[in-house]
Length: 384
Image (tube, rainbow, N blue to C red; front, top):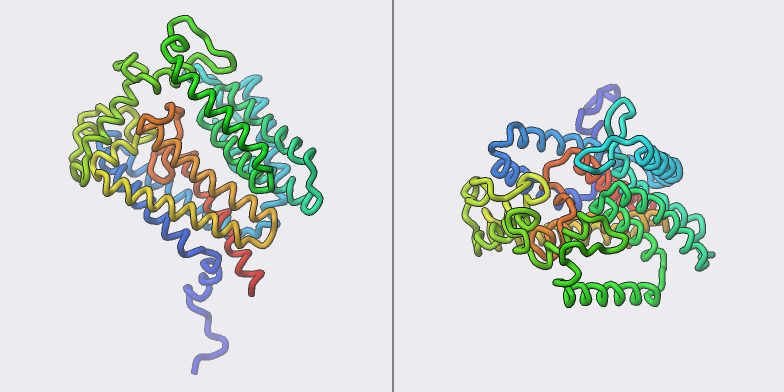
């Protein structure tokens, strides 16, 4: 018989830390991380330490996920307002005296160089979820107007940098919270209809709208060029249209089963631009084909469905809105990246979750998964 003074094993001491882990969610992330490592090994074969750095970034993201998964949603809620205010203040500081690289002012040096817009990917849904939680049971139309203003300020500052990709992700995360909070379909349908009509007009009058010297209102010149290039990549096949053309060639050359691991010609002959970052989906599709692509899409769908299931079962309005919005971040990342590489969306510089190289994006994804884990754990604690 063991003595009452015997020390528990290491596993018994560590077990409570793992009780907060959602098995299906962790499985989906693990599958995507394995696909990312496999693809990075092939596409980054001549990019120095890209494979090792990608693995390091994943370990950092996993550590952040592990820590955040232990934090109760109530404590996350307490961080909403200060994190949002710090993020907006940093965006204003970037606009005034930020660092400019490649024509965009997106960074600021505060001892280390950071990109404050990344903070808003998580701070924005936290803030809006906090706002609607405080008004639970007494929501009025004015509350949705205030939420729209809270969203418009950081999105406008990010677009001014300019950074269309990040502004799109922050906008999607914020709109998801507003929609899940109960925004009427009567407001959604007209906006979608206007967008569809605008797109149809652009396609119909593309030659005139994309002619040299024609400037569109609101959009920056490079954003206008991306839309025009999407409509007709052959307009500049060796310049603006090169990314889209090479991405579609790589995806098409993969066929049904792919060319095989480490055998992608477009990848290894360096025809695919940014093949370890924004266009890594093209490298993956070339080597693993339609079957591999469907497997990847199914993994993302499973991740998204599990996130929505966690949102539906969350014990508080704040948790439900936050989980739903974080899940839509994964959807937006995956849909926009696959869409731009496939030539159905403009190139906006959005990475493919857990697949693309990038430290900041990986940390953000780890934080997002940790939030879902924490909310899932809070549901189990309430039920017990």
